[in-house]
Length: 424
Image 1 (tube, one colour):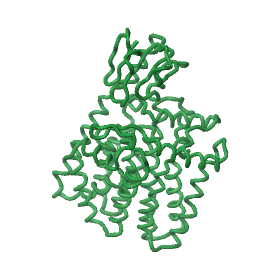
Image 2 (spheres, one colour; image 1 turned 180 degrees about the vertical axis):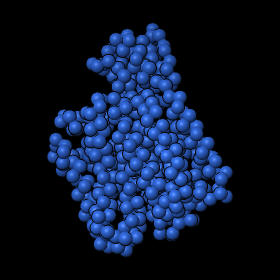
Image 3 (cartoon, one colour; image 1 turned 90 degrees about the horizontal axis):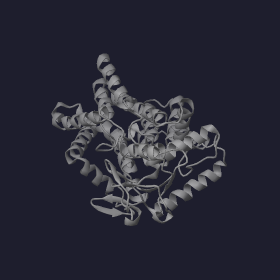
Image 4 (spheres, helix red, strand yellow; image 1 turned 120 degrees about the vertical axis):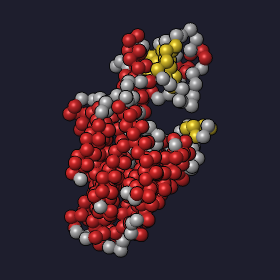
């Protein structure tokens, strides 16, 4: 078994480190990475619409190693690895070491969410929140069996840290409460520590914590009211429908979705009823909040419930009768690993290289300016208003919901880098 776990560790090292800096900046990564760099460097705080802990962790890495995609992502992949370890420890506690190995391997090889968006290899807040939430579940199981003061304090700290990475991390309190009820003393202890840890994450910021929290609340409400254009099932929605997460999962692979759900149900049936309900709540509660209470949706939001879903699926996969469904997940994971093995610079990175080569300084971007920002020369101005010309070049992402007006493209030569086109 030790050799098997060592092999799984080597697989994890490949998954989380191979060509880590190659994938193009995700549009949100750029904002979080820059905010973290400023936090640790003593600059004015930015991106206060989200809690600061995950960005602090990114900033420490960036200040130590230099600002880059790799330095920003290293803490995130460490969090993803920690999530897998926590899930394996939970599985070992519930179903033995063999099941723990299966759960860990499935977590490492599968993309979360489907089909090929490896959130666990990006500097996004979701990865950090999921790690602390997974450890909160592990600690809740320990407290459930034996409510020691140390575990209760750590449990509260894990819940507070999850919320301090991303607000939805606080939702792990629901399955935790299901697990440790009716231990009122443990519930109260965790309930005292969690908000203290959450508030402590704001202390290092060069701003008033109360003002920062008020801004976060108001800004999130404003963003939810505005929405964000997203194509779902062939139509563009400013406020995507509640079933968007289900559609994205089904569109990525109906067989994979069905296999995962069947395995998760099989896993739940193997568990104590209270534990099964708690893990189900860890999936359903964040999914319901995202579906009905957020006003916006992005594919990576599904990472919020990926860990408990993978845990249940891995427990179900330990039964030989579910081998065909398990094989579906293994094939999907193998495809994902093959994608990591063959990573190359693409889309916005190549467009940025071309813009640097020609010395473009004013660029119209129809797509994600923050994905391009990390690749252009210092001083390059990226604009999104077609009326703000003249422009030295125009970048159009065919995945975006908007289009570039014809007058901005006239007389320009076109170069294509996958879905991203450059006109200059």
